[in-house]
Image (cartoon, rainbow, N blue to C red; front, side, top):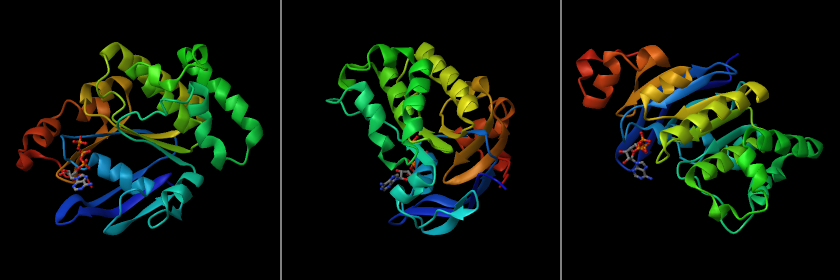
Length: 245
Ligand SMILES: Nc1ncnc2c1ncn2[C@@H]1O[C@H](COP(=O)(O)OP(=O)(O)OP(=O)(O)O)[C@@H](O)[C@H]1O
């Protein structure tokens, strides 16, 4: 059984179709990059899966359970965590308070301290500054914090919207290296919106390429990132785009 199965998912904002009959499945433990130009529907896809965008039609299943129609809270309780674009932290609260804020939904209270240690080992800067207010962190550190906070809910599937946006390349490398380590440690399935195909190819995984609310490419990130389909997705030569789904 796949971890995530999306069937004919459509999202509309008024008359605008942001996601147009999208279907794909994700295997457990996979790392999937969602790439494509601005307005392709990448964020809408993540929001629909997390239950924060209303779906016009279609079905979303995680571990065989139907998620579509459930509230974001119910979806989170099933083990899905989303890190939205924008790295919003609670600036007045300490780093540790930020990390613990999402643990209220957990029943395995004893494992929380252990998970906190895992986050601190992965991101030592968060451990060093655990009592400092989160508002004082740099952009890269805030990105680490929001990833850590999402992990503290003990998700099985984690979705991250544009973690590299506005960060220096060296910091992005650091964030991705740690994310790969944490994925292996926690046995996570990851869905990541990443504009840079070169970045996705370097990190490694599968890439789903979107344009105009549809999937126009799907395969190994290292291959897809260099294919004509990528250029076409960005510059619009739809005749050369390989329809995969
Ligand atoms: N809340 C909204 N209301 C109306 N239109 C929206 C809303 N959110 C997104 N859209 C529109 O839906 C389309 C898809 O947007 P979406 O944010 O999903 O794309 P994206 O691929 O994530 O792009 P970006 O990289 O710019 O975030 C765009 O045309 C966008 O303007």
